[in-house]
Length: 234
Image 1 (tube, one colour):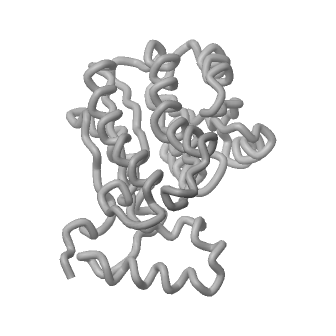
Image 2: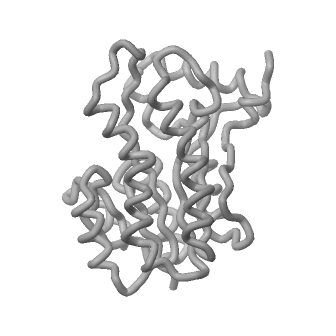
């Protein structure tokens, strides 16, 4: 049975990956900083839990020590959004955003790279904003764009372990629920801005994750999961 560590797996997209991976027969380890919530999900679905905070390298090292007998796949979904205009940037929140998306995954590679089996993989999460600049999306755009290069260079550094990234568009993952009645407008706009005429569903992302961890001849790539939104001109 292959072992999969899902970092940021206690909520939203990460939790959906955890649930599907367990159903498909993986030995899943859920890694997140809220250990109580992580353990609750692990107990519910039949996984195991480990405390892991991308903002704290000591927890990454400790988690690697706990899993020192090896893993096959590492999926990291962590993020720390800082959606402000340039003049409103906060240093600490800026660093946290880069740590969640870029520095943290590189530190995961540092500590878990030696534990990943040669036929295994590492999967990072980017996002369509990296290719769609706009006011207020500076930090999200630059960090997501950097993920593409992180995946490419980590693939070369960790070979033969495969490293790839997924770049989702607007996904109805629960993240938009905070908008209340405004959620439907966001999803409609996303559907209209895609080539396939709909917004993304959480299963679209989970399907891509499970496909990529099994795709043994793909490495160093970023898979764009946004219905062709980058290519629509009108």
